[in-house]
Image 1 (tube, rainbow, N blue to C red):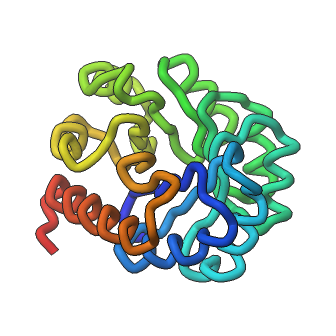
Image 2: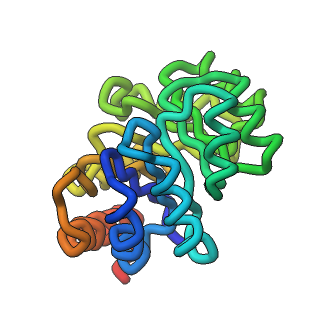
Length: 204
């Protein structure tokens, strides 16, 4: 995966999922999640996995139970993103050799998630913790821990969060909201990717 960005397609429908997914890939976003509180999310994941699974990491967000992890796996998803830290969800994801990104706000949640085998940590909501809070958490996390900021992250503040030590970001409403065309999502994706690369010192 070239860029540490997750495209969050909350509210997308199965009929538009693949076209929007292609637009994200064209812009350089190769991790795509469909939150499970979207319309028919497992069908969207199935279609995305069939069409893009050899080029992108496809999965689900708002995953709250081990049963949902298994449903996502059966649909072809290999990425599990949660708003909370539930060790049973992490453990089931890792058992199925899926990436697991649980939501954390406190160091206790972060260490519980890592102990359970999390692939990385989703700082959520990032705006609640803030950059200074993130720095304090980063200082005590084990070296090599991947920390992605989600919630209130976008073009205007990528540079500050990146300078603060964040490894990546999840892009929600800044990237996709229901009703946008694939072309419009692609434009947003290109702007976000360019801003992330600039914040990371990459002018390409």
